[in-house]
Image (cartoon, rainbow, N blue to C red):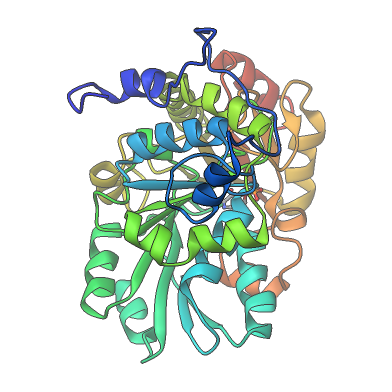
Length: 390
Ligand SMILES: *Cc1c(COP(=O)(O)O)cnc(C)c1O
């Protein structure tokens, strides 16, 4: 595919390998294994002397099509699809790290990522130091001789803190540390971490890449050498949390509309954030596209727009927050995000309920806080639905 084509075009035309039937929409290859012409060919494929599919835990044409398309969008040499966002993060650390290695990670990470680092990796003698997402000096100070990986999400969930990818990539590079960015909230449409100096991009394809809340999926992207020789692909091929052909097909088609969806999510979210700021029952609104956001200038430099997630604090604590949730008729009460339908969640009692109250307060997650993943409905309908409980 020509490199001169624009992203929205590439999202539609990359990764197409038509079968003998010349189908227009991409075919789905639901098969666990592939047939060889001869014993010689089977042997050559297994020895890696001849390219081609063997078994869907290793490669599958539908999964490959998704990988090619997402790689082009992120500007990555290589993309490896996984069964979920969490297995993408697991594959990244299992591939790159060994017992005795150390991670420096943002304190504002997805809850399951914190549990993976804190509870599971620790059993294998991989320790993590958590630092502020926005304090580059703290990242520098947390580096140990055995630090191998910086790991962050930006904007963070639910507070929409922005980490400076260029600055942290500079610190990481100088110290010989890999920087991994979970780009789930922005997608490559709004933010390109590899262009900003990151070594690895992580995705939960479950969110905006699918965009309609249908499947679980994930991806790890970066330089070919790191993905292949670094052991990430080897871990997946051996341990098995690969993406299924069906899920790959769904999210492959999701990528075709990603550009217009992300623009529409961002436009709706900005309107929601501006409207929420005017409501007397709201204490504070967190959205990177608002001039009142403490890192508005950085967000403007780093992201194309603010994205679809708006967090806000209602006056009156948990009771008032739950009233907003329970008064809604249109917005779905669910912790998922990145769906075409708006979703509303109370982080303190759902996504962040398993961490201690102290840790929650240190992270700035209050009892009156709500997070809305703004969908593609008419924005006045979302506003009217929230207004019922405000
Ligand atoms: C949902 C999410 C994940 C985990 O993805 P799954 O597909 O649910 O495994 C990781 N990071 C972020 C930022 C997420 O929102």
